[in-house]
Image 1: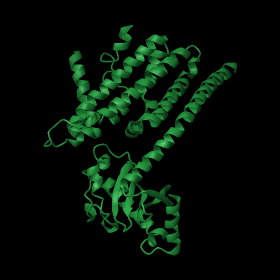
Image 2: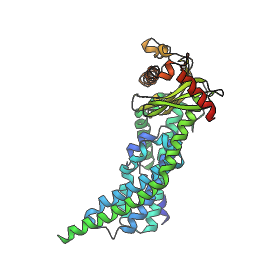
Image 3: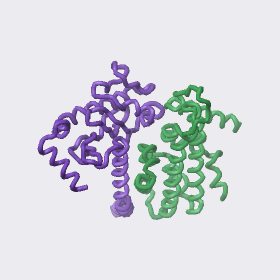
Image 4: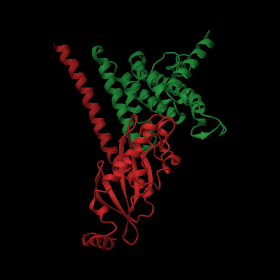
Length: 192
Length: 199
């Protein structure tokens, strides 16, 4: 059972191994703070939608399972969006556009379809947590590299000497692709 | 036939439940969100016009109030308005405080989603500080021959902010209160008096 939890970290990491949810990964990993916020928000949605979907899986006819999953996921995303805007407006401001995008984060629909729709609640919770944390981990690793190279900062604090000329490309879109590609390659190299 | 009706019914049930829950949570959070936004704007107004003792609504610009800032004795010391213009990838909205002589006092960018690392640097205080003590004619970026130094790789964002301030100030100059600031008419004087009374 513990395997359901830990498999998401490295062995079946949603970003590096399954290559799911790349759009939010590339978009929000420009700073560590954003990466953590996005990762935790996605984890919350993932766990909640996994719980509900594994509970109602026997009730939903097979033919309409996808629209039903989408409704469940979209509802949780909207809840996260509204609650964050009300209680943590600063974080909500910087994640802005990306929160509604959790709806189309294929990790969440992917886990609903591949796992929660076939397994019991406890395993689905563990799976959701594991995958969510794996997603967060991947985001944070990419963001640490990009933020240090691209802004000379970590969590908004300067970590490199003032004389360091920030490598702007690292926090722009190309930097996201390059860093993610290198990390994916590194992981594959280790596996062999 | 019966099977398809069942499909529709199940979907209807799920969506009805979902919308019910959403409506409930929206009811809980909507007032807090509104209050947050009001506070953000109010704090921004105070920040760009620190000398003001009270703000008096004198018009609407960009769907947001234009305020005359009055000091302790009820004199108008300046105005605040919300400047907004499309930058590179979003509307850049900033609260602007101008003195009564139409010199920018201070600006504060309150909402934008420009490119991280480039245009998004417009929220930095060092960047916003350069707009202070400049007048309408000086609201030009360096590429257009003005004194405003553009953000690296984000001239478009910088230009949008400068232009949004320029348009806002031009609008201010069309207001009667602003026109008559230095020689208040009888009506203008009575406004000052009523403000003192209501305080």
